[in-house]
Amino acid sequence: MKLKNIERIFSEAIGNNQKRLLFDFNFGKLCFKCLILIENKVLMISNLSHSIGHSVVFDENNEFSTYVPKDFYSSIVNELKEMFNDNKINIMWAKFDEYLSDFDISKYSEGSKSDVNKILITMKTKDNDYDIDGDKPYFKKWIRHIVNEVSPKNIKKTARYFGKKIALFCEKENISTGWSNKIQKKSFDFFDINSVENELNDLIKEQIAHKKR
Image (cartoon, rainbow, N blue to C red):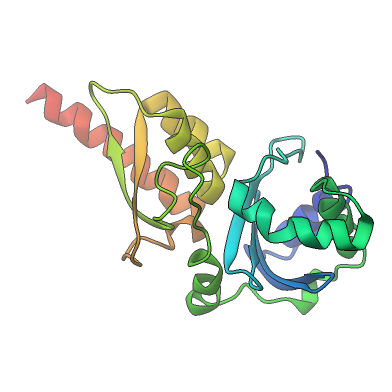
């Protein structure tokens, strides 16, 4: 699926040197807190009414998958049925896109770590088909594997925080992400993608140097 207005949001934010946009979105009786990570091309959307969140990853064409964890879907399906007599989640995304059509990015802040943590703490799921570390919403560390390959589910979770570019790099270099159920020193590293890229490159260089010893 593609949101017609997201490309403008990305473009204007880059022009204004804004790395994040924190804002509210209401869908019927449901209240959402949202965070757009500009460099990562990620949208974190938290259904505060049910304390459950989801993260959307946009590709190079600004398209995204509408596949969501079962518990996130369950948190909005009743509202879909009540408002539209339908259960298709694309309806909510269409309303979200309408909201973005009048979105003035100059009115919104990047949000503090405390603000963002209110979203992160809801990024949990019991849907193991979606996330095997669903009870761990906080990034902890990078792990480079020598023997075992990184799992596709781990790569997808990496993308939901750090974006598609970093996830593809991790897949290529066999680097996985470690997660925790408690906030960590590195839990907000996804705020600065340039620093992440430097850290990952240093990790690879260190391992190459270690092999040569």
